[in-house]
Image (cartoon, rainbow, N blue to C red; front, side, top):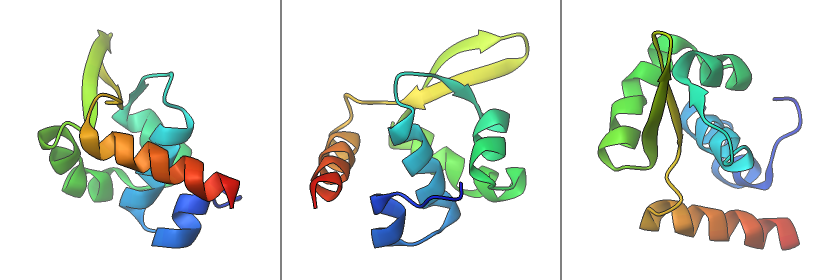
Length: 94
């Protein structure tokens, strides 16, 4: 991620923020956790530290299995995610 999004610029270039930003920008697709790490530059161990919270709060949801990989995507029905999407849209307009 070389070009920082408005969300990353506002909240900081932190691993959790980069993951959320990636999922927001690519919300129509589902990804394995390994692919998310690769695309965001966040290490596996770092992501393991906060991924459980994203699942518990239902910010991300399991969609399917591809081989041994579990696929996840942003849960656009979640009220927290709705607010993040709205904020992302507002920041894009500024």
